[in-house]
Image (cartoon, rainbow, N blue to C red; front, side):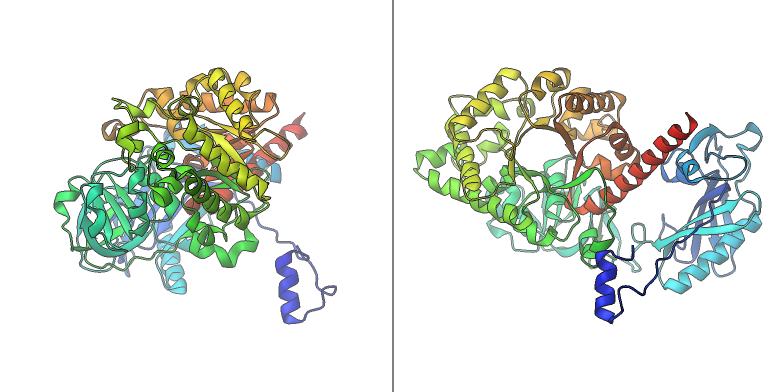
Length: 614
């Protein structure tokens, strides 16, 4: 736009007259692909820089990107451009664009249709050797122009048989470090980023006094009481756990590289050993390795004007309040999830009932107030949804004084947690302290602070919790919203009844997945077998049901989890179903916004096409 804030600022800086400039319209040809694909100017598997790696399949390239087809692949040697490897696969599926009288319309762009590849070409190469060599020549020229390895998308047009390069971007994810350092251990990349430092192997939280800032923390697994140490680490490696383990979730919110499920890490890695941790690939290297580490957060400040505007609000999950100054440059519409567990474990580190016993209730309330206020005032007037504490009994036991107040539970994940604590006579006094902190914030003018109740199982417990909140001066109103975490099957089944008691649902996809599928989210075995799947039909059906129930009852609905940023089809489903907001971890806010913007455009065009055909 001629009068966007960015354009106005530029003209002002360059002393241009605002009223003599003209607008321009870019018109691009809409291609009808015979085949399409991607190519890398290095080998993404081995990192070899003397090889070009090309993938191709019939139709539009989306089937490759989305993993729906096994593409043909070619390896070409530089600089001679000789084809050293061909792998021709059976390509049963292809995506085509809709066409109207042989011409493509804007509406057709959204009407991508998946069809079966004709039998006579399923096993034929999607591109011939001449096309492979021509693509390779383009790859060399593009890499030379940018002076770095590149990830390139290409299209072979059906009628003209002309090659079009439709996108080129730096290849950073798969690039192998150009050195002789060996990979000494590999696990699951749980939080992106690269870090170098000395290892400190700590097996017991009681032995953390030896930990020095910016060391690489190596341990069996982490729980909330490890949070203060995790914040000081340059990277985190755990021997067990999956992508939804505590270490993975907290590291993503803290913006610290993390690898989980690194088998035998506490034995293989030695305290004092210097390593490089690549949280994107899950690789741990001996010594210092130069790997490009450009995060979304680092790149966002100078591109803040260019983020797409979405009808779906993009919220951010936040762990430690201390990080809000780092993340405030990101394009988020509010904080959709701020867990009180971070504040309690990091700033207080004592069991709330022990706090009361020691007559330190005011200290507890003030610590919560200060932490929440730091965030609320920074992002005001954007909303901040604070989730009341949701420690499990085994996690509470590890806080100072916790053993006195906590029972031993065989399965604390589905034990005494969430609002079942708040209404119990044993824990209710501690919950009231959390309410007092929120009331103090509201009284101080932080009208953007809302709250969320975790792990709601029954209607009566929600009613009782709301009654306690009301007694503490917290009552639902036009500017004080109460949300429920939607993570239990009982809430899904009784969503209409729960909706009458709150102002919004926030889908906790991790817990909802484990409870819908009966899968322990911390089970490495079940994770490795693919049982923990947020896109399982049963989970998706539950999510659709929740969205419909929220809309039927005129309340808002959000989701906090990594699936929308990892899987474009998941984000597209949420948009199609009409979710109101998506709350992403800081490292994926930008990716989520772009993914949602693309999904919204497709949905609008699809609706427009349907309207035109009626």
